[in-house]
Length: 310
Image (cartoon, rainbow, N blue to C red):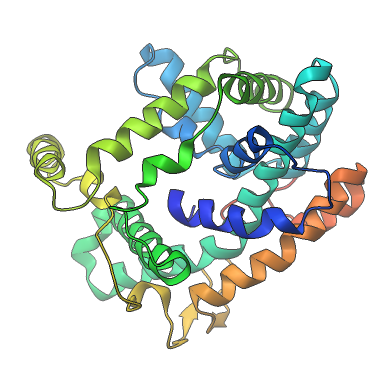
């Protein structure tokens, strides 16, 4: 990741770089912005039967972890087989998926590097890396929402970034279902994606804003069971300033977790870098140029780890 709000703002910023006519209607924009959340909603599929929820979460992990180019080409092929009235919505959704990857693969090494550095500085944090990761991302979400939109989660709740129509859900679900089976050998029903988005929305409605009575109650209940709270780590604080140590605005040194290279980019720098990558990915995808797309993916998975795009 980054998390939901950062991805949404990135999508709002890059959709205008697409050629005229690619995303025209309000429904197509909703499809693009939902696709721009990538496979993340599938991790939240908790209201289904346990086996179904596990399959959705396994699929999300596979999409993030490997076979990036094959998955994108499978989605592109899936769009070509949609009923004609659904084609434009499916195409917009697929271009949104590319936007999610562009930001993830660019920024995720920075987030992982932050989490590792914190665990090294305070070894007691090591068992809670998942929660620390979510906390870093929620801090970045709140910061970028204020920095770019001068808003907080009170004015623009995270869950409001998941607006969609029934058709967007249906088409997106069909594309994910087809790609899941053809690329990863995982069978999930076409309706599961819609359920995952609803679950994802409910999670953020429950935990935001951080510090609310409901968020504190959920956190307390989770800590009784697990000793720490992932829900509270996900929650967004109401921030009305530009301060954010997690964004590394001073460009202090950090170590790339995959290459070992010492880097100095801020999160803002990486956000800008991803906005430059996205139009090139979109052009290769639109042309069906798998060789060019693979070159731009550069072997990376969504986490930015090289050597994963077999």
